[in-house]
Image 1 (cartoon, rainbow, N blue to C red):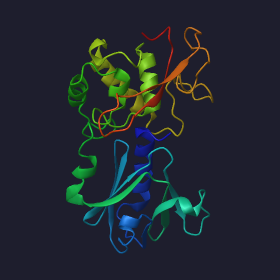
Image 2: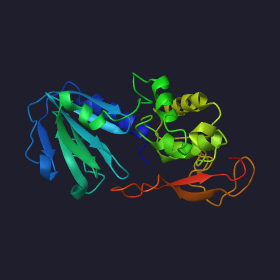
Image 3: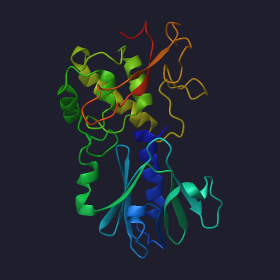
Image 4: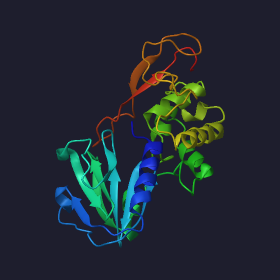
Length: 264
């Protein structure tokens, strides 16, 4: 599941093969930007900002987001793709490599000076060079009645955490995901833990929250509905958690897992 660590690695690998090179092909398969062609332009860098990717080409940035199903692949020219061609949303090639974005949830082009319009709403990036724990804490504390499970997942508070991290962080800290932010003991410690666990996983292909890389042993509660808690043996529970529906907005429920005994 794409979370901030996955996107960080994606940006790192794309940057290794694309930065400083000239595009020999640019094919954006999204109607609004289908006529955009950066062939002949230089790729300056590829960076991640939370769960967002920015490919900086010439005076523009290609903004992409994996959402739930997306991925970027890197191929040698002539290599067979591992996903079907109809899923390809963007192709960027240089003299040595072909990069393909499959099933991307967002593909858009903005001027470099307008990047703030696509990522400016995000909170401090947990894997960014300008990580600001105090600002993340301030943002989370601004809505003290909100459930901690929702505050952790809100990219406007701190950018990079996804559903797996949300469930696991609440378990490690013994917090029900529905507990209000104001009732969370040592909120600064939770923010610090959020950064430490995602940093620990940023260079791993397999994400682990338990420290165990064996299959089936990498999470405490996520994806383990009905299975015994690794601490107390109580069956893990699962439900949906989301903010109340607001006028003009749909429900934003996401599944959450917890141990009813270890988390209060």
